[in-house]
Amino acid sequence: MKKYGETYFEVNRNLWAKCWSEKTRYGFRHLSELIYKFEVLETEKTCYYNRTWESYTYESVLRGLYNKAKENQSLKPHHLRLFKKMIANGGKAEAKRVKKEFNTIAMVASLGSIFGKDQKEANDWKARMIKAGLANKGLTMPEDWDELSEADKESRLNKVIEHLGK
Image (tube, rainbow, N blue to C red; front, top):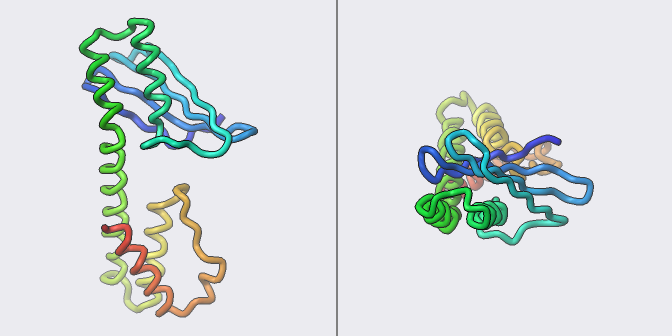
């Protein structure tokens, strides 16, 4: 199976959770490993048929890891408290990471106005940088993109850049 969106949630320098997604015949699943000093202590899997209803990506498998670690006493109480706190704050940390990533994409794409010798080169740069930054994250360019005027392209690209930079 191909792994998608491998993400690490750090509790402290010795304890973290590694999470990823895999496609299945009927939907997808989130998998995770609780790792302490490079040793996998617990694993968890949650399957989905359509979509998740989580506050942030991987919340369910992280909670499952916490419950297993608590039940199996595979972590010291201090580490359990830290892990629980990280899960509770995970949505905020994830949102902060995404915002930072979007700001970076917006900044790099906006450089097209400086690097482009004309409107077409500037638009090509912006579109290329947005596509690269948002690859496999749901970006779909309009089917008639190549038929649009350069002024329309510029207007649309600038709106995307403005939205990403907020």
